Image (cartoon, rainbow, N blue to C red; front, side, top):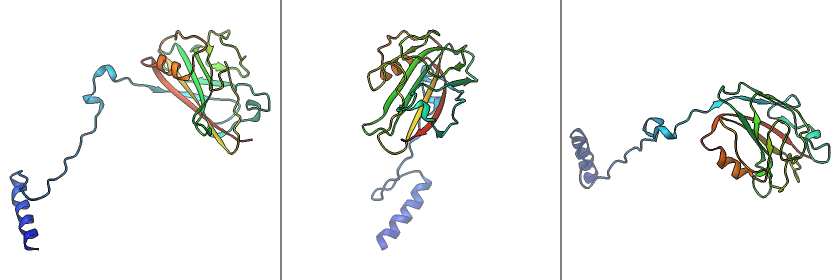
Length: 199
């Protein structure tokens, strides 16, 4: 007890002199988190948020059965609102993080022209569309929209949209990872729409 008291007194005196006493546990120093102020300017890029919505269903609500397997199984209609002014094309990724074997990609599309903010439903299952947009391959290895078809329970389906400042040069056989890699450095805005579905 006497030894502890001496140590406390020593610490009190030496703190004033900013010296850590020998025999007492050193104080942990706080780590300063990295901020945009100490990062290279080349790695900083502001990304705007825009609105992605559908006239067929609301965000965080149930996906109508028409857009799921066992029914029409077509892609839903979409609207793009408040895209950044420097947007040239828009890319889309629809995925299910609740799939039994990990995140399942249901649909990818890129080079959708920014001028066409209303996307019709039932896009044909082909690589190149009339608008110039290209549909790639999902987790099932097929081109185009692969309708949600959960084996059991309620699943969440996230449709992510990326506003790009360029047109991507990618073959239609490209998958999600290839698309994500090609988008690096070109994303100027993001939007997202989530729907739930169960059989």
